[in-house]
Length: 150
Length: 108
Image 1 (cartoon, rainbow over the protein chains, first blue to last red):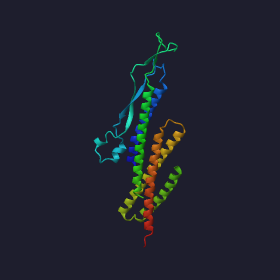
Image 2: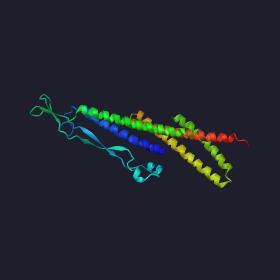
Image 3: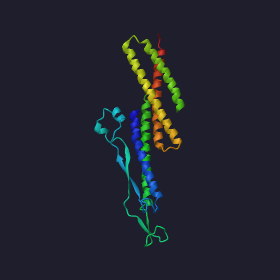
Image 4: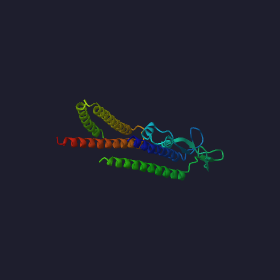
């Protein structure tokens, strides 16, 4: 059971990572018109960077001792290593009545393209679904294994 | 889920008592007693693992319902683990009872 637990954890880490990616996308969409930030200037689009976890937990090693240690490396799921800012320049729009307009009447809007964010959102949603399907298949396999004893 | 686990634990207690009875009757034969002792231990550990997975799942649900920042999928995975563990324990119990009844039906 514990090795199934470990398998579930791999997919679970992917679900957590996709949820965080979704949060970042939500934040981008929410701030697509934000002209003020704590650091000054308009909001900058953020992106997640995924990292493959290579540290194997003790349960996996204990229950799969017959496998080579090198084979086990890299079977530990995924995590978000960092959230980086998109270095694209902000979008300058002419709007002299805006309080954040500069001397020439231009306002710097965030470099967020909502259409791009929508595409990212669909990708994150599909990736989440794919990992849920993996979990369901794992569950099905465990149930089939239990049916041996029936 | 918790109700199921309680009744299951009671069933396991019965089996453990049976196991102890077997141990007492076979105490004079050292090796057999040792084997059944380690089986009892193994069984106790298995029940404890089952119980802890149920507790983890229950805690997860409680925290989710209380509005703490818990990932929904993590709770679902914990519940799934608990369910698989419970099913495995049920299968083992069924097999044990089957074997016990088989012996009970034996003509002496």
